[in-house]
Image (tube, rainbow, N blue to C red; front, side, top):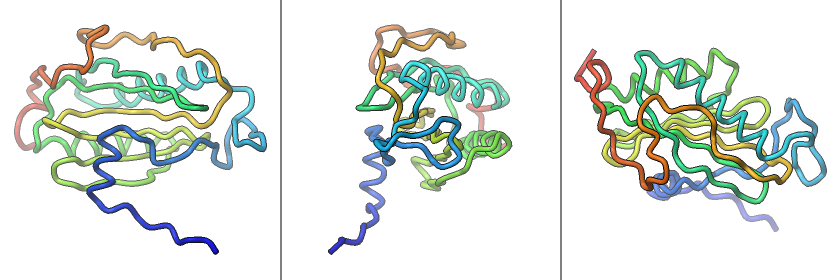
Length: 195
């Protein structure tokens, strides 16, 4: 007898997201550019190639948000058959501007064929989650001290070594600094109040 799946309570969802634990397992959606094996792995793509695609997705959404925000690379993590790339926003985004930030990311993804999986309207920790046709998951979320984080999770791919991202942050690189500092860059638009 199969047990019915229970939805996570809101506190558990926030905890899972705050810890960066992916909610989705490895695997490609139908419509993926690569084919999948019986184990669910996308063939023809390895972890390094998938990480590079993730980098391009994160770079594109940051470039698509206007006005610019300063960002730095967050840590890269690997799991059994996938990679998570991260960008940490160093610009102070005021509470009044967070929804604008999320709306611009969501609109960018919609215009580029991403499917919006979920929108968390939590007042303190809002977030938007999207997925590509090839199974890459992307998100923008606000966490402690109102800092924005962007993440891209790859589908299940062939195991390989994964190099550090090559795109240059548009501010200090904070190499070998973990955790990254809290947002410390002021913006006339993002750090201000109201429209």
